[in-house]
Image (cartoon, rainbow, N blue to C red; front, top):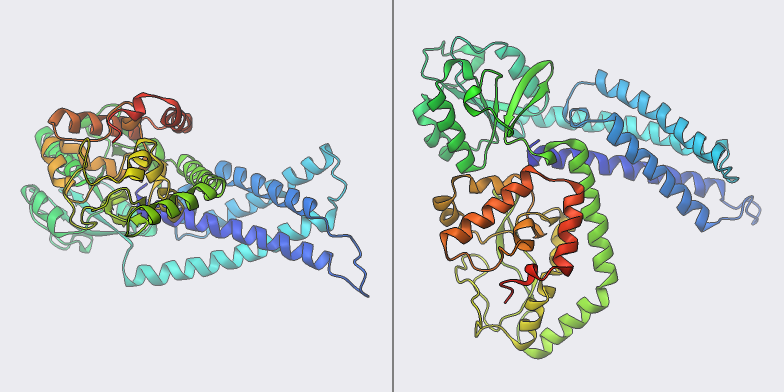
Length: 467
């Protein structure tokens, strides 16, 4: 699932949890609203917090078990209605079972049934409103663009493929093919031949590519994959694809049609993406709240040490190649240009201030990036974000460098805890850093993130080239 779609899914989930908690608070407020200046039931904060925590955990588990990304991306209503009814019955059943087993006294019918019923009603209304918004947006234009390659005479079920893509918000911008094809096939635009792929990817904003292997040679397929990797664009293929088969090629279902996605990553899975994002939010909030006194003290010391801003906000390349402001504590008397900066930090760099030397050595200058995590621009763990100008330099050395942009950049990463941080002056340094980043993307596990966080704090190797 490409980042655009991940953000749509996560926004819908956040809306659901917002409505759930509004429902709980509304029922508790009405139930404890005083009549004749005397409340019927004393308001107990601990009860409310326990109630909200339990409901949120149970609903989160139901979302992970009973939902998938298509539930939130598809414009069809029948699948959503079935899933919603099943989820509601599961919700009531699990909450009731917990209340009975643990004999929670303040759980009665009013307490737990009314919030669920109110939540269901509000959720149905929100589903209808969101569906209407999606339909209006898709009439104006799709939110993601797809390119077809190798349509030819052997592209089977083309109509079904396009219909399935359209339902999920993908618009087909056109196709490339060396085989003569009717110009009005499915009302698609012919963008040229296979040799024009590089030119098309430069001129068109393409999110994903779908290839039919039946009409393409092995060389043509590999060339297409190479160009797509160079641009960081996802590739999906029809099963007849022995040329690129391997561990990176995994099947998935597109409304009954078997497809393969080149370089499918664990974070494409709905449950993995959801788990990582929730962890990012809670971990970042915990760090920022716990260390807020330290952050304040560092800001005061920087202000007293040298004139200038407390924060340095250079532009960095992030997920899908999007540019964002990366927050850091200022550690230099003269900082590189945030937009077009090209000067890397070197050992014993004279620009580093006295306080900056210690901040950089202990990685305390990176703490403000937890705000980037909360904004959804970064993750706690992932490939470190590079300066904008470094992309071209890295792509000359490592063809699949742009694959790093499949996921959010991180405050720390697998390359950093293995000693590949700091300067990238040599080709070996560039290749090793990218290799570790790609390995992390293809082998992600939640436990791996925990391991990397632990090594970031306690491993000496992480401090290699820290200056």
